[in-house]
Amino acid sequence: MSTRESRGRRNAPFDINLGELQMLGAVLGATENQMRLAYSRALNRTVQSLTRQSVRLMKEEAGIQSAQTIRRRAISFRHQRASARELGGMKLWYGLNAIRLSELRGTVVGAVTEHHNLRDPKTGQYTSNRETSTVRFRPRGKALKEANFDDAYVAENRKGKKTIFIRGEQSRRREAEMDIYAPLLDKIEDDIFQQIPEIFLHHYEVDLKGRVAAGIHTSLRGKRSGGR
Image 1 (cartoon, rainbow, N blue to C red):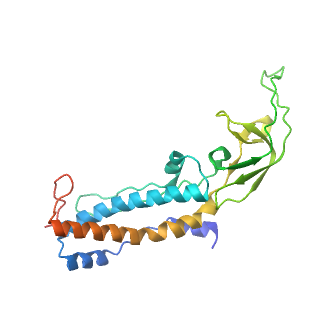
Image 2: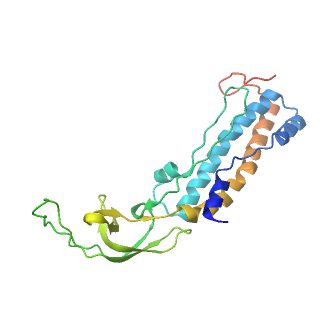
Image 3: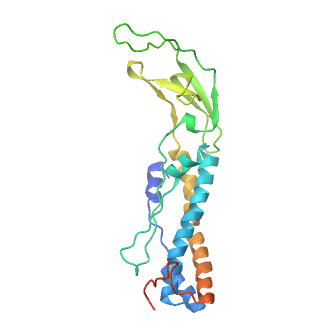
């Protein structure tokens, strides 16, 4: 399956078998209101479970260093319901666009090239005498492969971290990036998406059993959610 075909699968909705949830509720002797409240709580707990797994997966497979960067990119869920009587749902989003090398764990092969303070007499801008070549980056993320960058040189970014810069038009430079979309897509689908029904059902069953045993018919705020 191509990446484009796989992307279509990634955006497909996640079906939850409502009949299975209702059957479980009937076996436990739960009311409609208890099942609705358990459904809502199970969504929240599924969000929390998958967020933790997503952070761990992207850290190990892509080698992204900052947990904050991973959380911005990794996953986003949102309840969608028009009224309290509706069950609602969740939405997933992953930011798998290319990422700067300085944000990845890995090794830049080669030493930092020296810079000078000469300015162009016409423009007043610093002139560049750094020699460019093919520079190699060895990522530590399991899903990423070693990459070569042409017309590039090794330098420090504004934070003083060693990285690779690529020279573009008019001697403008930009930090090199690595593509993580294709390498991570299958891992996300296999390790994260496939687990959603199982994780949700587990949280739903645990919460519903607790509500039935304790006779709880209200939400945490003490308000009824509709139903009997």
